Amino acid sequence: MPSKAIVTLTLGKEYESMFAKYCQPLWSQYAQKHGFDLIVFTQPLDISDCAQSRSPAWQKCLILSEPRLQQYERVVWVDADIAINPQSPDITEGVPLNKIGAVDEFSAPNTKDYQLGLEKLYRFWAEQGINYIDNSSPTVFHNNFGLEGTFQSVVQTGVLVLTPSTHRELLEYVYQTYEDKGSSEWNYEMRPLSYEILTHNLEYWLSPQFNIPWPFLKTFYYPFLNRPLNRLERGLRKFGFKPRETLFSQCVTTAFLNNYFLHFAGNTTNEVKYIDSTITSIFEI
Image (tube, rainbow, N blue to C red):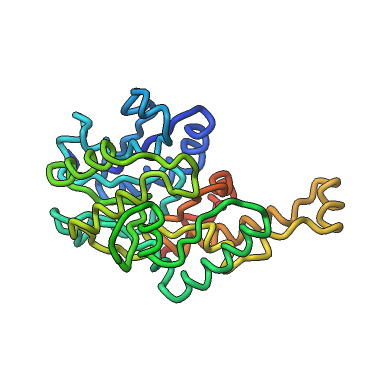
């Protein structure tokens, strides 16, 4: 029996369908390669009034309470809007049992490029009228939520390598103690969960490739994908030609093949469909 499991939560028919069609086949290949069980929760883990008043993202803090997960030595939480490259290495390799494996948000793909990309992303959001909070540094990221301290890193909670027997209490504490700020720019549970992991010195930093944000890559490396369709492209679409979709697929597939876990966060969730499944099994990282 496998001693480790990959776990996620999909709520709602649209989200469940997206995951089943585009993500689950890739996850299954990865799980089989490295001996993981794959567990997908399709019902809320908490149906209280509190749970219904905030994002389902918070419920990742409850997975270690689930009876069916108690048998596992390691549980890997992965957000359902992440595409896993089946050729990726075992994410649990080298992570101490007493630590929580995660990617530093401010180091993906590296510290210098992240800062440059963040500035570009903020400019783009401002131009598009998209609400955002200026999190210019890890310290500011936590302080904006009312969390004291001067941490120089941020735990990206979309991917977490956990030990049920060790980390259940901390995750439940975050769920029960902190409140949702009510809008996506506050990152749901991420700020308090990051803060508590860092406060307890539980972080074990994984390669940024294990949780690389597609919105960042798109804005930093492929900014032309964000521009409106030009006259020629609009004309071609009338005849069934979609050059932008072809270009989009090439860029997304390249990012997917060059990384381990590609995170389609925020309003890019539906862009996972552009991964070209016909070539993803050809190349190895």
